[in-house]
Image (cartoon, helix red, strand yellow):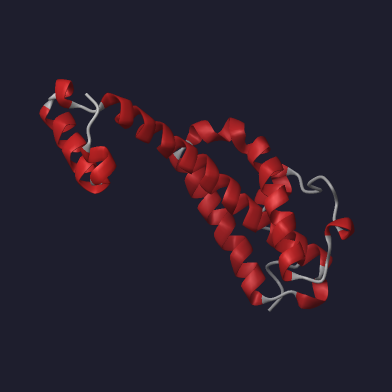
Length: 149
């Protein structure tokens, strides 16, 4: 049963669908839209992982390529993104096999961040991600991260 409520009042639709599920009123469920929304939630988790990796990689590149501009803010951003990525993966262990692809895709976002926020240009940076998975998640990488400031 496709609901017009889905189109006119999404919030109310979600409450209604939740109630139908809790009460076992499966015949009243808007299965088509419900299935799409559930799939969308999974896509959002993948996107969140990619976005956080892009920010993390961008800051790791800035740290590496502009040592004279290193800041407490960069250090905190690196730590924060690592923590949030770990939480995403802990909450969604089935994303682990997607990690390498997410790093590949996040690297492009990281490059954009570096180019936007520094005098560096794309030609100044590696075409492919120079960081290993281990380096990206190693709390002691890059050297000096914990000792500066």
